[in-house]
Image (cartoon, rainbow, N blue to C red; front, top):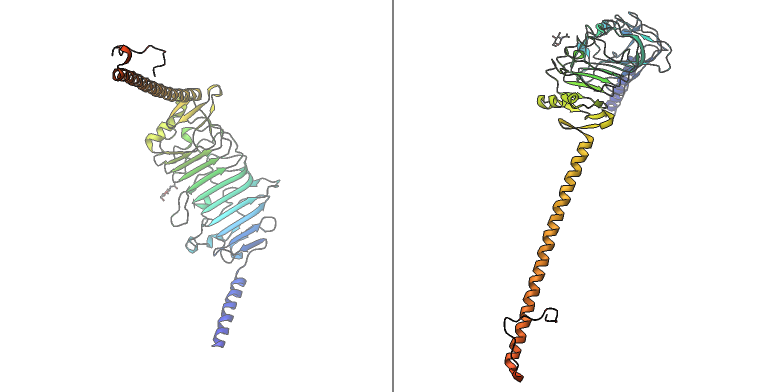
Length: 383
Ligand SMILES: *[C@@H]1O[C@H](CO)[C@@H](O)[C@H](O)[C@H]1NC(C)=O
């Protein structure tokens, strides 16, 4: 029995050792195995490009390259990753590639069609804090299909109208928290408006998020091809209006988030509040008016009203309430006074009758009681 237990112990220990030995990573990469699908983190300054698939064991389903301060170039970054079949992915984790630039990087990141050759197993691409010199046409083509593409922090110096061509961003089946998301956030963009046609090919994208990227205007054509769009976030930008017809073609749109927008609230500019109301579109982020500053307006549900009008109405309501209360008090006091007067009169009469009775009974000294019609003199103390 004891021998059996010992053998079991050795087998388990051996299995752990084998697993440890089996885990290999290229020079400059470390493997964090705290999850069942671990994360490889490769230090750009310590690795030799290209990164070779066969150098990773287990397979790099979640891969981070950080401290990037140079170019990924084209065609010389990843090698042999075509052997990574999507079928072997652990479905509990999204297959991710994370590119993180060094905040002190002096060299712009250059990526081009070919940079991501063989990386079609990737489902989520994130590029963080990079100064990207250019997003040329078809730059993401090698991924084929992505659930999520996020470019956040940093700067994009130039962007081709076809940058998102030939990449299908949309919710992937069978992955946890499928998002179908394209996010550009906290970025310095090449322009304060979107490059014409930049999102045209993204017919399956479910959520476009443009947060804090310095946009001063959006036009209807920016999103009119995104027929699969469910959520649109245009938040913390410097837009003040959205043009009528903005939602044309967006038949599946359900949520629009304009958080952090300071609207120009001439009432006609708030057309979308009524439109959203009638079409069952949820507007998130409220509607705050930044202008016209001379008479800032505030949106109330689907109507809008100058703020001084609103204050006027509030004062009117308060005045009405006060008037009603005053009227009530007057009526009440008047009724109380009347009751008191009546009581007094009754009491006076009763006292006078008593005097008459007393004088009749005594009959004395030839005095006659005063006639019943006689009333006591006012002010003579007949109470
Ligand atoms: C959109 O999704 C459908 C269904 O998955 C697919 O057949 C089609 O190719 C996709 N379109 C684009 C432009 O990626």
